[in-house]
Image (cartoon, rainbow, N blue to C red; front, top):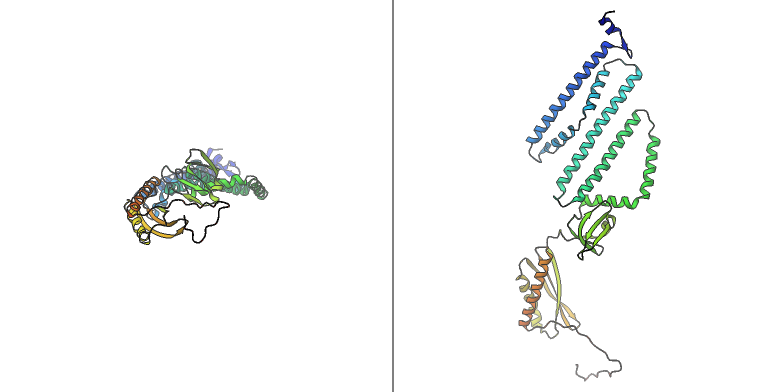
Length: 370
């Protein structure tokens, strides 16, 4: 028997070797075509992304697409090329079904790789867009946690889809996973609550590392935001550790994000003050406040009669939130008021106390007060 006759009559899985050679050539050609097309697509998209103006139309999409295409697997391309060659053969039904299943697995794995890369790229872009440079390490923690959760969900769905396509009954497996997940969630609900609170802190950003905050009567500078706890450094120097859930339960005050500081303070003058002097005091206060830089006078009023004093309330606004500057300004205001009141002849009220002596005779109406 001549070689051509042997080559055309010899069967492998019911298919002549000649057809197998044609399939091999087709697979090689398909692989080269796919590799060339992928390289051209990368070059075209990369060049367009470099030429696009930032923030315009597809300028946001093309860089992402270029990075996703970089995650194309060479081995999976080779498997796809082989499957293309096999699809040209008249294989037995059993092997044809296996080829179809392998097609499903190959496509699912490549889509999962692209999806995982897309998640990573989008999370990285989100971090760069919203995180202040060097000031929010909890954003990195959050990105890691969210990226891990999304990737886990993606690969779990792909794995279940592949198993289902291969003929496995995944209904019981999914049900057991659900029951197990509920049991774990109930057992670790406090830990999971703090974990989700950490993610909420990173996404919503009520505070960042370096911010000065108070919550529930506890205050300090944020040093570290972890998956379960946040650490503060108090003004006294000690470290305060609070759970993330407790931090988000109540009202939280972030002093670092203050743009202005509204100050309200009061003082009292003696009852010996005349009505004319009392009426002149608000104007005196305004002049003293406006003499300080970065201060905007709001109001000063005689609010009422106290025990042995006439009460005044003053409100002004600082154009800077700096606390030390506030203390310097308030000190200057207090000293200025003392000088102005001395020049005006107004005495600041002194604390008064009435002492009743047990057994002492009551004063008659004609007695002069002492």
